[in-house]
Length: 71
Image (cartoon, rainbow, N blue to C red; front, side):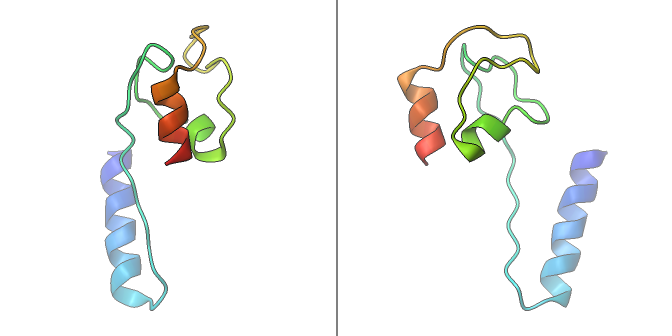
């Protein structure tokens, strides 16, 4: 339900504004982040790959995780 509300908001914004609008669906998983859930994308977005306390993972980020963060 929350996801659909976000996509609807993006569509409405795109139709009523000249400013660009961006959305994303974070579905990446790895041993570092074994589930793709709300807020697990934040370390990738801000380049702060540290232990994932939100999901209780203590696995350090791998090279693939660092590559995604650079993207």
